[in-house]
Amino acid sequence: MWNNIGRLSTMTWLKLSIPGSLRSGFHGVQMTRNPQVRCISQGVFRTDSKSRPAPSLSSRSVMFVPALYLQQCSMRRVSSTGSGWYQSVADSAPVHFTEQLLISSQQTTMLPWWAGIICTTLVLRTVVTLPLAVYQAAIIAKIEALQKEIAELAQRLRYEISIRAKEKGWSEKMCRYHFKKNLRRIVSELYVRDNCHPFKASLLIWVQLPMWVSVSLALRNISVGLEHIPSGLQHELATGGTLWFPDLTVPDSTWIIPVSLGLINLLITEVYALSKLEQSKFQKYVTNFIRGLSLVMIPLAATVPSSMALYWFSSSCIGLGHNLLLRSPRFRALCRIPSSHSDSHTPYRDITAAFMAKYIK
Image 1 (cartoon, rainbow, N blue to C red):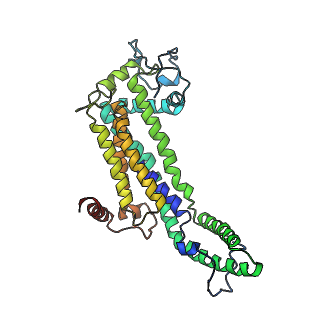
Image 2: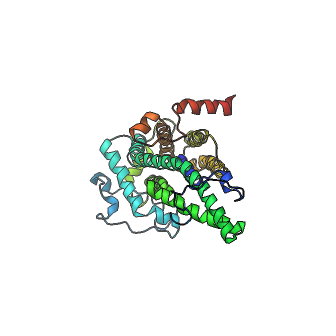
Image 3: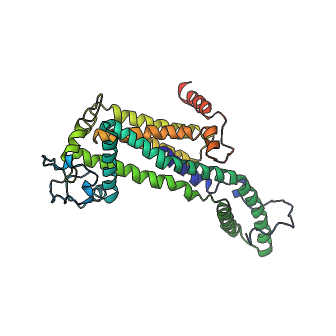
C-alpha cells in the first residue's frame, strides 16, 4: 500500500510540472512567432459487552458455512451492537462478504489458516491490485512523456501573454493570472487527448485501501468470535498458526511479525525514494510521512490478533514484490507500459547501488 501512496505524490507533482524559469516574470521574452500556429491563449477498536439476538440461519452471515459449524457450541461473545463508526464498518456488508470469502477459501484449499491467509492475500493482490498497478504505471508514464510538450506550450503561451499585456496594459499580476488560467486549460486538454488524467492513477489506492480494511476487519471478527461467526472457526484460528505464533487469535507476543512488517514497509518506501533522481519538496514530505506511518504500524500490529498482523505482513511482502516487478523493463514491455525518461535498463542494479551509497558507504 505504501508504494501506491508514494505514486500519488508523484501524480500531484506531475500535474503541473513546469520548469521554474517558465514560472518567472514575463519580461524580456524574445521569440519568433510562427504565423501558422494559432493563438494558444485564445483557443485551444471498541468492543462493548452488549449482546444481540443471533441471526437466523438464512442470513448471509452463514452462507457457504458447512453444517459442521452450525452445531450448538459454546460461543465467545465479544461485541455485538455498537453506535461507533468502527463497529459500523466492522459490521458492514463488504466485511461480511470478505469473511465468507476467507472461510470458503480455507475450506476449499484445506490449508491451515496461516497458509490460507497468505495464499488468499497473494491471489487478491495478484488478481485485483496488480492489473491496477500496471494501469497506474501506464498513466504515470504518459504524464511524464507530456512534460516536454507542456514546457514548450507554456513558453509559447508566456510570449503571447507578454504581447497581449503590452497591447492592453496588463499588470504583472494580471499577466500571471491569465498565464495560469490558460496553462491549466492547455494541460487539461493534453490529458484528455492522451487519456491520462492524473486522477486515473489514483484508482489503485481507492480499490486497495477498502480491500485492505475489509480483509483486516474480517480476520478480526473471526479471531474475536463475534456472534455471527460460528465458534468452530475461532477454535480453528486458535490452533491454525505455526512456528512462534501457534494461536492466530492473540497478538504476536514476540513482536517478530510487527517488527518485520515495519521493516518491509520501510524498505518499500526506500525503494520508491531511491528510484527517483530528484524529489520535489512535497514528495519528500510524503516520503517522510510514510516512513513515520511505517514505524507506527509496528506497535499497532503488536496489539491486534496475529491473523491480522500476518495478513498485513504478507500483503506488504507481496506489494514489495509487485513494486520490483513493475520496474523490470521486460515486464513493462510485456504489459505495454510506455517508456519514459525516468526508466532504467538496469533498475535493480541502480537501486542497489543507491542503497549502498546512502546507507552503507
